[in-house]
Every structure is written in C-alpha cells, then in structure tokens.
Image: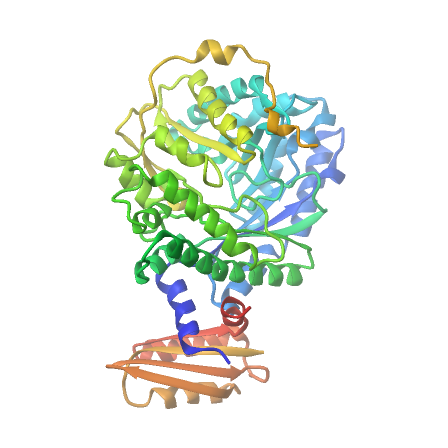
Length: 452
Length: 89
C-alpha cells in the first residue's frame, strides 16, 4: 500500500519544488534520407521526421496529464546534418536547416537538434560547408539547434575547427544581434560529445544509434535543494547520501515517463539522462543547492568541491533507478538559466575562471555565459580550446555555449526570456591568444587515450 | 487502472461527501480512503479504481479540479504508478 507521506512528498515536489521531466527527445536517424539532390534529401527528411514524430507532442501531453508530472519540452534530435549533406556537393546546405525548422514547426516541438558536424580529428565532405552555414542557419530558423564536436580524448583537439568555431560563434551573435544574439544560445561546441544527449542545444542522434529512439532528460535542482534544507545533515557524507536518495526518486520518475513514452509511441527506449538542469524560476537553481551545503554564495572557495560531490551523488543515486543511463548525466551550470548563478555573477563572487574550474567536475562546460560584444573570434576560440582541453584530459564531455552580446560591455545585461533566462555580461581575462589559435593543426591526444 | 486522488486544503464540512459524490457520478469506485487533519489543514488520499469510469481521465481530472476550486481545496488525480515507481524499489 502507498504511504500517505510518500504521496504528499511527490505532490509537494511537483507543486512547490519544480520537479519535472525536462524533455522527451526523439532521436531519428536520417541516414536513409541521403540524396545527391538536396531538394529530394530535404523532402525525405521532412517526411521522415513528420511521420516518426507525429504523435510525440500529444503523447508527452497525455503522459503529463495522467501521471501529474510536468513534461516541459518535447524535442527531436537527428543525425548530424554534415553527414547527410556531404553527398550533395553544394555549399547551399542551408536548405537542410530550413527543412528541419519546417518539420519542428509542423510537429509543435520546441527545438530540433542535429545541425551538427563531428570534426574532432578532421573535416570530411560536408563538414566545412555545414560549419560555414551555421550563423545564417541559426538566424533564419527559429527552432534549429546546432553543435560541433571539435575534440575528444581519443582523437585530441582539432585546432583548425577550434579556430573556425570562434569565428562562427561571433558571426552567429552578430547575425542575430537585433534579437538578443539568440543564435549563439543555440550553438554548442563540444569535446567528447555524447551521441544520446536529450538536452538542447547540443542534442544530435549519433551514428551508432538505432533508427529511432526515445531519450528522456529529468531535472529537479529545486527538489534536491529542498531536501537538503529540510534535513539537518551533520556531515558531508550525510549530504551525499541525501542527494543520492533524492536523485533516485527523480530518476525513477524519468524512467517511468521514458517507458511510457516508448511504449505508446512504439519506439525503443534509449536512455534516461540524470541531469540537474536549472531553470530561471526562483527555487530551481543548482547554485542554491551548493549554497544550501554551506557556501555563503556560489563561486566562493569550496564551490568546486561542493559541485563535485553533487555531480557524483546525482549519478550514484540515479544509476540504480534506471535500466539505461546515458546522455550527459550530471549537474548543469548554465549561468543565465540559474537565478543563483546570476546573483553570484552580479555580486562578483563568480567569474569565468571559477566557472572553468567548476566545469572540470560537473557534467558539461561553460554554458550560457554572456560575454562582451567586442570579443575577438580568437579569444572565443581560446575559451573553446581551454574547455576542450579539460574535457579531453579528464575523459569527460565539456562544451562551450557563450553568447557575445553585440554592442554591450561587461556589466550590461542580455535577456533571452523563457527557459534561456537573462545574463549579465561577464568580463573575460586580459591578453591576446591570437598567435596560438592561428597555429592551427591537431592538438595530440593525451596519453590516457591509449587504453588498449 | 487505479488513480490516486489527493485532496488538500482547509478543513470544512462535507469535503469527503463532495469528492465521493463527484466520483460516484462518473462511475469511479473508491477502494481506500485515508485522511488526516493537522490543526485545521485537511489531507485526504483516496485510491480509486477508474477502470469502469464513464468519462475519460482528463475529464475526471477537470471535474474534480472544479470541485476543488469551488470548495477552496487542491485536488490532484494521478496515476498510481508515479508513486509506486518513486517510492518502491
């Protein structure tokens, strides 16, 4: 029999502590849509996505209603478009972005990811053209998200791609300058990108994946914070145990939703991504969890240790709750989407160097950072290179999603609205890394890549 | 399928009767009821069989939510599996 306190706990988590399933993401392979005629390829893509995902939004809403769990986003991830575009022998691959956007609009999903290229070791046919088209693609479409993988522990870092991406990020921000530079918020540069990530903007459907699959991303920073607040933990081990127990419950809910979605859509279940993803809502903040552990403000000394504990405990708690765990799985630290982070930046407690250190122990990287609009492409490339190095050496995913705020300087603010939030423009470090970035070439893979 | 109906709010006369009447009107069979009143806060949890309900799940939800609004109560109707999966291994 169900216990009263358990029922009330669940209802309280949903009503007051922002417990939700952040996303149901359907991964769809586009390998069978490849065609040398770009218009035919785009038609096939549009038709396949619309056929496979026609019930995605409705199914998500049905599950949400029956189980009483908010399911915030329904999304689609597709095969990296550079692979599909390679055969077309044209530079005008923007049509692919428009086809994806059309499909997303028709279906009512809020984002579609996979306008991507994987170039960690070098460029194949289609990769150059895709990266060059990103700024325009993100400015003329509404729901398309783009990502580029420029490094991995196995392959090292493709510094030519790093150089290109610096320019791409700045150009994307410039092209969408009249809309809060929003394009750059839909572009992620990865090292060790994962193939089954359900979260945007970095989701794509990896080449080793099945034809179609359902991945679910759970969330719940507010629940973890509230659990810590209610409990009176006597030492750090108790804190870790409490986070584990809470993560277990959150993940069980994600697993249930994933199974239901998979069953109702007749699509195999892929993974549950155990991530603590904050939202701009008050009380749904990763920074506030760290502060609940006893830090005066996120960003002060001790923050990296607290985040390491949180990230590890979330995984340990979640892993037993789901039959397949994958994606990014850990704590996210997107600055503009997290009230606690924004406060810490505004009060001068959190800067880019501390964030960089934090990315060594959390699940992704420098995320949703608003930087001054006069930043040079080389500096953005250097930020990407630093993050990629952390990911490469530590065998983990790292990512960079920075938004150059065109026409604004440190201390100003950029407001995206919705889930992307608002962020203060953060100052960067002094000095010019241009000569280093212009060296280009491949940064060799570290010794830990030789595991065989 | 079984649903968990939770009723939360300030205690007042006839809550149980109003909720159970609404359930009976649409063929929902109440299997189990627990309730507690803490100071003047009222919490009632019902396990109900909705297998032979005469309306769809979302209509049942709307109906009970309406009863809640009219009486200043918060009423949730949720599939029991959410609680089973979160709190049982």
